[in-house]
Length: 206
Image (cartoon, rainbow, N blue to C red; front, top):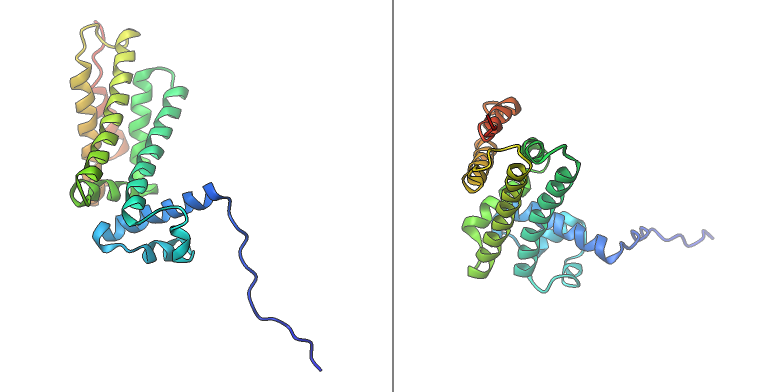
């Protein structure tokens, strides 16, 4: 008699809770970027994450909560990288230039972050969600202005430099990068163009 051999596949090892939550968030970013809020179901996200749909509800109450968490996660990823660049840079102006270069590269590596952010401007399910998007954007603006303020205080800019206007010009360049990605104009707007654009924001003493 042949021994009874089970054909059942062994279960994948369980992930720690925080790692599983991050896995779900990363899948949600991809799917919400691809399908939009209205077009996405939690089953789509579970499929992207290679998990059962009920697993999502151990970490998130519903699709809306997961959507808001995905927006926060995308903003957190940007802020953490920008903070690291700020800490490693020789000075604030160098940090701003390196941030622009990193952002250009990140759009190629993870375009879903840009797509989700772009969709969130027009597809947020309610005013609270839109307020979250607005608050995250304001936090980024405040971070950039703090770098310009540091640059002015350290003498890298004129003492009367208008750092608020310079901040919004910097953000406008970021919006230009977003458009180049969405319209597939990456070959038209090159990294060396970014360096020249960033030099226009510098107001040297002199």
